[in-house]
Length: 467
Ligand code: SF4
Image (cartoon, rainbow, N blue to C red):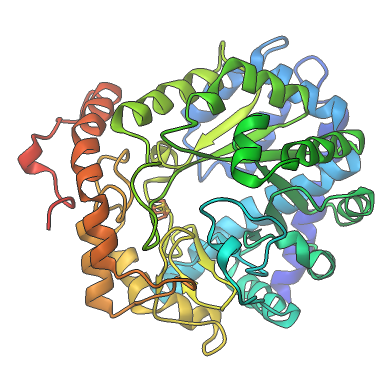
């Protein structure tokens, strides 16, 4: 009860400051006041130098001040306030502190964000996507999803991300869930083809739902993978979201084939013109028995991504769009965030997996509480093994340290949860071994060049690759 009163008072205080900030941020010196406020709320999670760096880069006319000017001009202020309350205050501030406290209390990882798949069904038939071939439809019921969020909140988790299948097939349940749990932020990774005006109206009513639209590049690239006419549908959705003054971003899987197309100047200009605020980049992951290494970027291609993303989002130059490349940005989140450290994934069958790309588990939400699922042996092994390398450009126990995933899965007895064609961890680990060997020296060179205190390792010193 006392906690609830403190939470309500803090939320109210945050809301009052936020209203003021939204009114004045774009004015002279406004962003500096926002940074002061952020430091008050987040001062124990970011180093003071990080706030100083922001202060020197948020003057009038500077790149990121221009970006936020655009946000303030183009996004509905009520929606913006709702997003800051749900994603900023509840997920970022309350969630971060509560989950850390509970992680200590229970001695396990407690995630800050939980990804779950409302359904395995999808309205598209994209090449290479398991959902296209999967004949049986699996769903988390509304009650399942409500239970995940309710038990998650009890542990401090206030951020939820929906993947799939195509989550928006379950739109009514999603809106019901978002309205019931106003103290949570919900991000939906969607192909964008089922978004219409009534969908936008619901987002405006909820104010705690953020969309991330998946695209493969421009028209030819998107349609050749997702089907003819899909690009035009996504464009129509982007236009609709912009007309409704809703914030949104994109999610992009980069491969050996499209890495240049999805980082070209033309592509960024096009995204910005469409009102896209952020893009999440995902390195193609070769999970699945039938997935080969052909689409996995080579070390040279991945190095290109490393430099290009930093160039585009730099404080100067680049483009006014926020980018995150999850495989090359391990540095900002202390390496691998899976196994509940910052997030975990629940598939539509209810299996609680360490990561959306790692389909092994020893616990299912239908048999156990969320806390018991987080206490499963595989998650404890993640907890004990993180970070999997002191070079955070080699963060993954699968892609860059396959011997580590191989050992964790064998030691804990976790089973494949691939719903289409279970893949033995031996098969997966052997498949990526050569990639891990080839990437390691490049990662060493890049990490050493950015961290003068780091001693670049010789090939024989690099652990995690060879069995
Ligand atoms: S398991 Fe690999 S892909 Fe998943 S969060 Fe960790 S590093 Fe990223």
